[in-house]
Image (cartoon, rainbow, N blue to C red):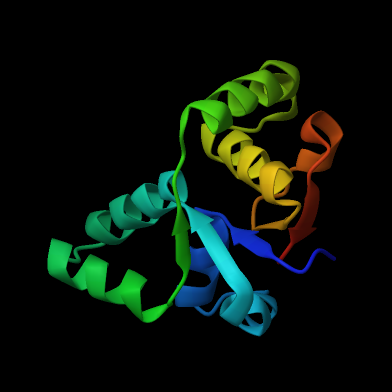
Length: 128
């Protein structure tokens, strides 16, 4: 496993909801980052559940994750992965996760049951 870990929204929600696999996320939290794309998805889900914007921000800040920008290079990489992975049932967030993980040589942590390594070459770890 790479020295650096990138969490997607499903991994963060797994941790917050104390679902199976939350212990694996908790174990890497001190060295973990998250893409700004995944932050937006976590925020959307917490809001959908009834949290107000201040609560959402507080919950995310308490995790002390490094938020990584999702810029032009990552967008192009994600689109390239997506063109190969669409049939595998992956979505934009997983493509973004793979793009950021590949750029940083990091392990991508997800609770989604799709192997990103097939289409992107990113090292992945399924948490549940």
